Image (tube, rainbow, N blue to C red; front, top):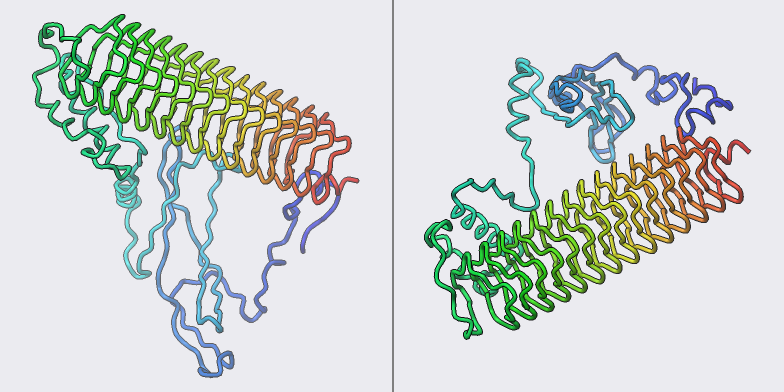
Length: 504
């Protein structure tokens, strides 16, 4: 009844039960206690199992769960009910506990159930009339709320930039409050007053005097500071929308809480400058230097930052969403929890960068360099990072689900407990990497190199390792169900407690 444990089982099904297993083999209840499906409100009586209660009796609770599936949009988007059966009632007399198990089946396209977007369960009284599925779907949609980590910026009206000022002010303010900061403590208490100024499309004011060392809180929209030496000047809380600082010297300037949206800072030097919680949305900083700048909480979405330098900058929780940072340099920068979602990072350099918990969702960074960086807990789901270098990087518990990592190198990297499921890693180098307990299920790893890599207790179920180099790799306890190892090199590999050991 347990099934056939032969070579075919080892090759195709291990470590799971054989395909001809009779499920009655798993039935542990005595024959007298085996029943057809239960309704859920049956009476029960248990005798001689409890010293204080020689007779223990009652009724099953009379509830019925209903389970529903929301299919993914690319699989039709249907919402339907799964038929459930109550097939187990387990009484624990020591704990005075009753466990009820309902089971149902739903077909899926693969082992990850990638065609299922969500599962939804409700419970109702057994005697209550069955509610239409459409009504349940309405409740499901009402409860299905998508949470965003950062507030989203609405689209800016074509001829109403005053609305953009309002939005940016509130985004920066909410970011501060959300991190336990008081706007008045960071020099931001006057930010909301900016929204009361005249519309941004007004005629520019006369040029300001450069004799002053402080422009704090001033409305300087549309001014031209190009090519000027403004070192150590303060622009804190100033409205600098559309201002030109092209090729200006902004070293050690203070832009705390300033609004620099659509400003031109291309070719400028802002070494050691302060941009705490400043807004740089759609600003142009191409070929500029922000080395050792203080940029915590900066909002730099849609930034034009090609060939810019941020060496040694501090930008915790900075937002570079959809920024263009091709060939930029962040070597040695501190960017924990920064957001590079959908950013373009081709040939950018993050060597030795601190990127703990940073987000690179759907980012593009072909041939970027993250060598010796700290990418612990990084999320790079769906990112295109082919040809990148992650050599000697610390990336424990990082997630790369569905990322494109072809020809990338993780030589000697720390990837323990990393999530690499469904990645494309053709010819990717993992040699000497620590992949202990990592998940590489369904990964495409044709021709990848795992020479002397530690894959102990890693999961490679359904992965394609055709012609991969696993020589001297540690595969002890690795899950290799349906793993394609055709043509793989396994000389000196440790395969104890795996499917491969059983072949020997």
